[in-house]
Amino acid sequence: MRRRAADYRRPVRRKYWCWIWALLGLFLVAGLLLFVVQHNQNEDRDGKPVQEMRESPQREAHRVVNFTEELMSTTSLSRQLAEQMTLAKAYVVIAKEHNNLHLAWELSSRIRSCQLLLSKAAKRGEPLTLDEAEPIIKSLSSLIFKAQDAHYDIATTITTMKSHTQALEERANAAIVQSTVFGQLAAEALPKSLHCLNVKLTVDWIKNPSLQQLMEETRYSPRLVDNNLYHFCIFSDSLLATSVVVNSTVSNADHPQQLVFHVVTNGISYGAMQAWFHHNDLKGATIEVQNIEEFTWLNASFAPIMKQPSDADAEPKTWNQKYLSLLDHLRFYIPDIYPQLEKVVFLEDDVVVQKELTPLFSLEMHGNVNGAVETCLEAFHRYYRYLNFSSPLISSKFDPQACGWAFGMNVFDLIAWRKANVTSRYHYWQQQNTDGTLWKLGTLPPGLLAFYGLTEPLDRRWHVLGLGYDMNIDSRLIESAAVIHFNGHMKPWLKLGIGRYKPLWERYVNTSHPYLQDCVAA
Image 1: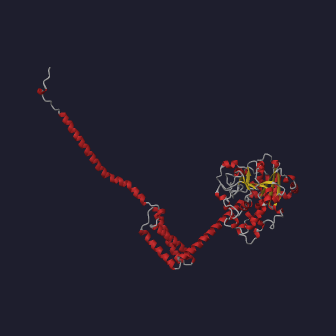
Image 2 (image 1 turned 135 degrees about the vertical axis):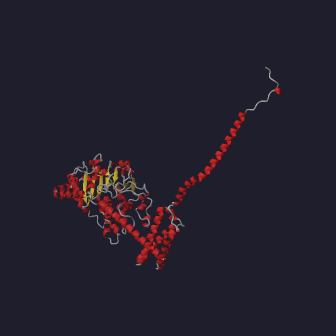
Image 3 (image 1 turned 90 degrees about the vertical axis):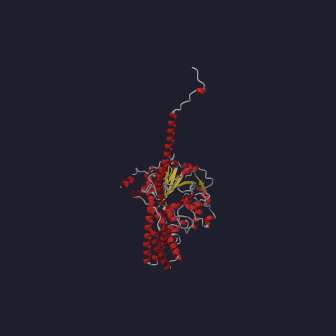
């Protein structure tokens, strides 16, 4: 069918559902707008309490003050009270010295109140208020002015405080000296079992003339002066300690029959030493035991150290027998004791040998006298720590930063020693130090002076120190060491010895000896 022309067509009917959708859209937009407005109003109402809740702990944290900072603050009442309390304490001392006990009691009472108030403020973590602090500040101020009116002025206070400070320093120094003495007594104290062993061996020596004869014959053995052998010297009055040094050296030697030990002890231990080494197997090594009391040449006219105990001008601290022991100072007379020997290894009685030591005798010394391990890895082992460089006699001849070294395991070239006349050097410095002001106690400071410029540094592994005081030495360093040194007060034969290191020493003790077994059991 043919369509009509456009002019004759009927108009298009509008659909009502379009209007319906338009109205629904408007209602939807209006609802969203209302929802957003209402939500923002709720947030404004609820946000303030939440924010206040979040801020309240922060405000609380700001209230809890750091009381140390409070005491340091120039404007705080706590600092004012603390300063007043300090001044009041000074006046308490002065008042007591002037027998003004009532004023001293009043000051002490206010000081206690002040301490209580500061303690409460520190506990609650809040600064002091003016209402709390003002009464005590006023009362303390009044008492301080009262003390000043009693002629306890600032000059008097300073003088008194200086005298008290000096007295406290003297007491502290005395306590340090006393502690050192007590520590040394503990280190030298002989356990009952070892004392028992000495007594048994001494009795054995006295009752056995044939043993005495045998030891007398050993004294003239040509091995004692044979420079083709390896010579070690030990100066000690400790029987068991010396036996461990000898036993550990022999046990770690490839050819023990080539070793010669020269032991010097005192008259009390001489018989016990002789009997012990006669009863023990040394695997072919030769041992000589000498009594220092037979060294008639070692007298006051020859050795300056012999004069010090009788010198009325000497400092009392230099009378300490540990440091005046001739056995300790005998190391400076080795060429005089063994005039025919050319090289020796000196061992102290608190060392343990873990490696073969004979290679030490073939070390190149480059003309030096003393081969020793240096100890200046830490700054406190330099010369200035041992010597008094305020003395022109010391400062003009020695470098304060020169590296220190250790006694305990030393190689001595006795030919070079005699050429350099080291013993005379030692005598010179002992004479200069008659008043005890050039160095601290001990044998190392005069050794540093006598061997200055004559010491050959050895590899650190030859000699590891510190097992008598340092509990944290690296185990690998100990294992690699040829000699370990129990220097310090914690000797391994004492109860206070460091347990970690004791087995290193105990494994060289001849526990099978019947006398030792009897004494330990007793």
